[in-house]
Amino acid sequence: MTFHCCIMPKNGSPNEHRKLSESWHQVAGWVLVIPLLIVLWETGAYLLNQPWILPRFSLVARQLMHPFQDLYASGSLASNTLVSFVRVLIGFLLAAIFGIPLGLLMGSTRAVRGLLEPIIELLRPLCPIAWIPFALAVFKLQTLPQVFGIRASGTILDQVQTGMVFVLSFGAFFPIVVNTLDGVSGVRRNYLMLAKTLGASRRQTFLHVYLPAALPMILTGLRQGIGLCWFVIIAAEMLPGANSGIGYLLMYAADQSGMNVVIASMIIIATIGALLNTLMVHGTKRLIGWYGKEF
Amino acid sequence: MEKNSDMIEPVVVLRDVSKIFRSESGVEVKAIEAVNMTVAAGEFVAILGPTGCGKTTVLNLVAGLDAPDSGSIMVRKTNGSNGVIPYVFQHYTLFPWRTVLANVSFGMQMSGMSKRDCKKKAFSLLDQVGLGASANAYPHELSGGMRQRAAIAQSLALDSQLLVMDEPFGSLDDHTRHEMGELLSEIWSHLQMTILFVTHNIDEALMLADRVILFKGHPGKPEEEFYIEIPRPRDRLSTQFTALHVELRKLMSNECA
Image (cartoon, rainbow over all chains, first blue to last red; front, side):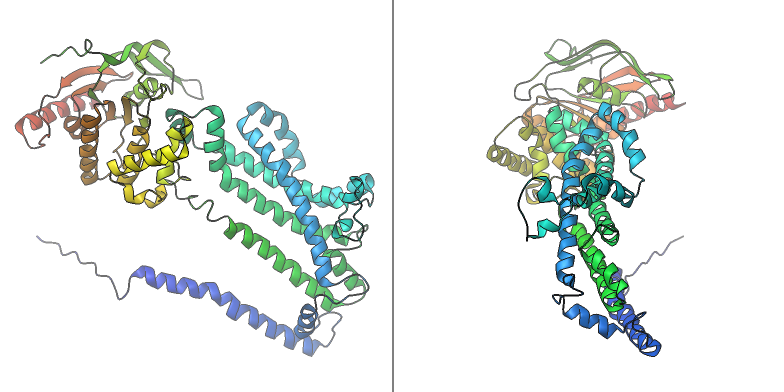
């Protein structure tokens, strides 16, 4: 009895074929779906003819082409976006500065974890926006330079209210702490044993095993944190007490029935959010190329 | 064919060593009981036995990763290694976030060696195990055999006289396993090291070791001991080899029944 076993590769390797179709899938959304939606929008808006509800895409695009034009004496699209961005950056950096060390400490010291985990788990589900009235009551409309007694009038820092930074930091703090903590406490015992048999001290183990092993999770925490900040700032700027920022401009334009400015702002907000995420994902890829490929 | 290895400079001595593990539900399991064992300097000892008879427990105790519940363990500290005993595992033998070179340098870096010296020594060790070309690769880019080569280089970097290995070639295919066995034999005779090697593979134990200690039972303990006096390089097909192979297989399968 003989068996004939014959597996022949088809023309071109199967991998090559997959690669080709994958790249096609990747561009399809950009070259097909988005242009199609824009065409539908443009014709729909033209037929509807009610620009205070749905302005034509071309009108919104024209708005986006003039980002430095002053709108309703409230600054331009660009200047308000910059204000929001600086607020987010400061709030996020503060959250990272406090969140990462605390997460590392909690992950490596059981006592600290036991002390702090309940309060963190209790405060974490609270939407950061809920802190705004409290933050306003505490910090009033004080700006960050005012708190530190620095004169910064005329600079962009003059638009960074302490209460907003507080709310942003609070929002980003939790995903950063919790992910760092999970990263540290999830380090494989095998790597700790390996480090021990290679003569690593406790401090060296922390520096050369815990930290690099937790890095992918720390970066995930940072990515979630900055994404949340960008969510929160828009909502925060739409509330009373704000007088600048892209969220403020959006709300103000809506009151003036300037729906083209509203939609232009929405497009800017979405684009920056997507860019931040892409930056965090691709900017850190090289650092953690090993992740998910363990053996 | 008894040789008294206890008399020639023992590197490892275990006296009446027992180890009990407690599971999370509080059940106590005796892993090993009253183990007496000696490894002489320069000896290649294989601990052979079926899974779950306490072989790894013995290695962990020797390497200082665990403490015994009773009995005493003496491991002679050797120069250079600061009392650290390099240990080659079956899995997770390298840090995935470090390049091969950085992995081999790990132990030297921990002992405070200068970066330049680390690199120099790591490169020469990698050449020795045939991985010079992969110095800058990451572990996930290597095959299983190459990873174990790197792991051997990593442990050699500690300049320890004693090396313990826990089924280091257990997840490799036969061909690669044989290659790795040859490499290890070469290194062992070249550096005149003492190796304590755990395996459940009879062929591997017979190819590599001076002495095979057969572990059995629950709790595990050394049951029989064989001095393998087949001259090296060994031939798997020699009558001496096959006879021993059959004998060990019988003894091991008795255990299973």
